[in-house]
Image (cartoon, rainbow, N blue to C red):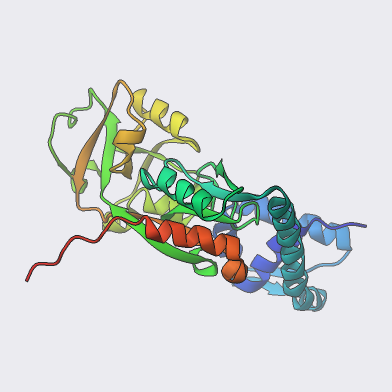
Length: 303
């Protein structure tokens, strides 16, 4: 009998959280899907791993035995998988870099050019991920480093350095009643339907709906999308509006859609991220240094 490591990861999250809802948010999956996977693991092993109650999920005796060994097993497997893939990349002299949307904006080609100059014979394989994976493959070990929007779920488990910060704007159809305004207070958008990332992305989903700036006002969801093209189409078709980085107006212009400054939401940042295990990887660290070297200078402070 073989058990998928995905099932063990799901088990480990529930064991650590003691709560299906929190574990589902951490894993970016729905609670019913997580419940189904836990039941599948119990059927495969032929034991009950949890007792379920209103208070949460308590480990049974077999569950405690499994929980004691799973973290080390997963750590070893992640290391082996990462080492194997890194060896393949090194053999072909390829650095795998995940990214979302516009990556690091105009800094991206400068970063890749600087890395290639630093590492002659190497190339950067840029891998775009859907918004359903805010770590762009980094958490799964599919890439060596990533250019990501901060904050993102799982950020505390990775190394990050901020590269740039920019304002968030509102994106809306060009015939929207507020489209002619120079700037729009966010409070005036609270009752608008929003085009959102998948709810399984948890904090990422909430951040791009500016839940913290709504003072408890409920969010209306008009559509859910995972890719920039689908996102823009939903907005142009009038399913809702959305928040976006200011740079989206440069990278994703589209007829029928306008970008307007919004007042009352915090700015967003782009960072380079890498796993702690890559702290001693000279190739990844060269890439990180190239990212940091291309950061725009800070504006001078005034007395």
